[in-house]
Image (cartoon, rainbow, N blue to C red; front, side, top):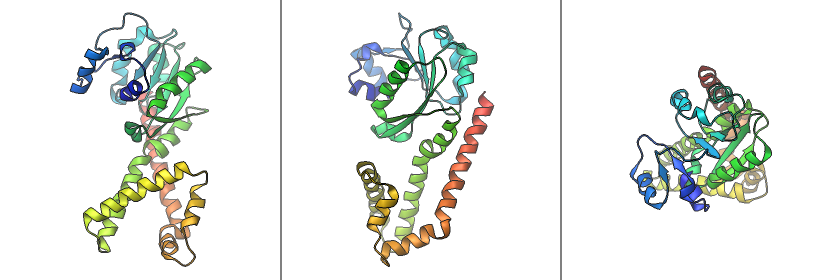
Length: 253
């Protein structure tokens, strides 16, 4: 996110980072104006909480002085509910939970946002602007939806990677070298994703366009999605991830 903000033109002099074990690239930014591990001289406009969920309860008291006022808190920690932040930071604190996914690392992520009642429209736009530096954004109606978002887009990249692994293994089994199968699988999934994003049609329509009657694709699809087997497998996958998200949130609250 920091790289994205810098690329978007946000001056490093306006950003303070607290990191107990900063990497060399982060330390090097101090010479360019970044404040590292020093308290800001003024109340921050926005605090972005980018810590692991398991250490959130120990991190929040250190910044509780900024709560119950105008500072907007944005959390990207999965499983840490808004009630946790309100309990430690104060009931009047503006809080937004954000769920990005790993393609954010290359600016191709998508982030779901959900706010508590203290967040106004301008603060929502501020959060969208900050998260837009790493990809697309969507605003949810309820925090409850974050469990499903976590399962679909948060965990989704791992499911796509698992499918790529399966393609590579199958490619080898039908006669390709590992290197060739890996190259073909990566390019195919990447290209298909970019095609879905660029074309104003549904994935079902794109599938139909590449599927000739009684052709090779039709034969493969019959094995893949026949009798709804793929739908059932994907539903079971997302349900398992969603249930685990609920368990983590319950333990954290």
